[in-house]
Length: 285
Ligand code: GLU
Image (cartoon, rainbow, N blue to C red; front, side, top):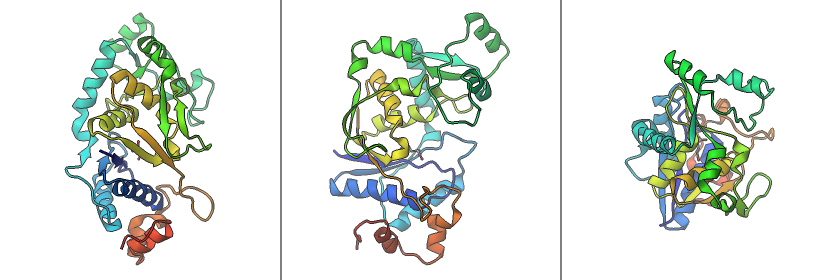
C-alpha cells in the first residue's frame, strides 16, 4: 500500500516551508488512498526540544492533517539503530573515527565551517585506535565505501533509484546512485550512537514507506541512503523530491525566520484554508 511520511526534526518551530512539505506528503497519501505517517526525528538531543515536538503536533493538526498513531519518536528506539550498527560492524563495513570535525576539515584542506565535501578519513592505525580506545576517547562509526563496494560486488554498479519528482537540477526518472559522492559517512555519531541516514533508512524500511516525499535539500542524501538500503537488504522506496519554498527575497525559509512560523501565522489570524490556497494547494473544504 502507498505509504509515505513527513519526518520533521523538533529543532525549532515549523514554518511555511514545512507546511508546504507536509501538505505535499499528506495530499499524496490521500490521492493514492494510502497511509500518511508522521515521524519525529530527534536523535540530535542537543538541538531537539520537547516543546518543539509539541508544536509540531499542534501546527499539523491546525493545518488539518491527520496521521497514524502512535507516532514513532526516534530517540525512543536507539536500541534498534544500535543493532544495525552492530550488524554492519560485524560484517566489517564500518570503522571507528575519533577525529574531531576540525581535524577532518583540516585534513582535506577546508575550514571547519566551509561547504561539506566527501570526507573519507579512513581507519586509524590499529595501534592508534587501541590507544584512543584506552584513553576512553569518544568515536563515531563511519561506513567504509571501499568495504561496502566489495560487499556489494556487481550490485554496486546497478545501484539506482526512481525519482518521480525532480532533483534540484531537474534530475528525474531512473537515476544511478553514486554513494561515493557522500564519502565515508558517519552512521553513528559520537554523541548520539546513530546518525540521520541510518535512522531514516531504518525507519522507512520498518514502517513500510513506499514513497519518500521531501524537499530538494535532501535529494543528494538518496545516494548514500540507497547504499545503506542495499547493504541491509531493505526495499528501495520511490522518491519524489519537491521544490523548496522561498520567501519574497528568493531565499528558502529557515527556522530562524520567526515571522514565518506557523505559530506566528496562526496568531496573526491566518486560517489553514488561506495558507493552503496561498501555498498552491486546492482548498480542502
Ligand atoms: N528529519 C529530516 C529533516 O527535518 C527529514 C528527513 C527525511 O525526510 O528524510 O530535515
